[in-house]
Image (cartoon, rainbow, N blue to C red):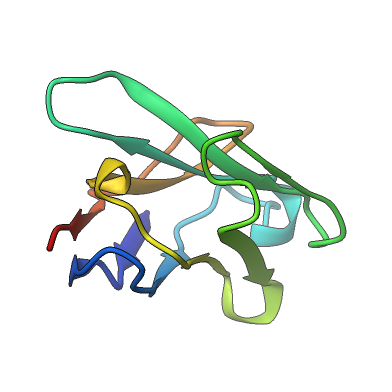
Length: 116
C-alpha cells in the first residue's frame, strides 16, 4: 500500500511538500528494495513522469518540466518518499502519485492545484 499526502491549493510561486508512506511489502522485501518515482496526471491528460530516486537515495532524476524546481528524497527508516515542489506554476496542477518503479504499484494520489 502506498499513501500520498501533502497536496493542496497554492498560488503561483508557492511551495508544497508531498509525502508518501509505503507498507505491505511482499515477503522478504522491504522499502529499500524499490526505486521510487513520482508521477502526475493533469485533468484530461495522461500520466507524466516527474522524478525518480534510487534505492539508497543516492541518485535522482527529473523530468524536464520540473528540473530545478522539484526535489525528490526518501527516508528508508520511515518507508517514505518525498517530493518538494518549489516555484509552482499553474501547469503543475495535477494529481500526484508515488509509485514503485519495479512493481508500478501506486497510491490514490494527492491533488496539487496552482492558481492565482
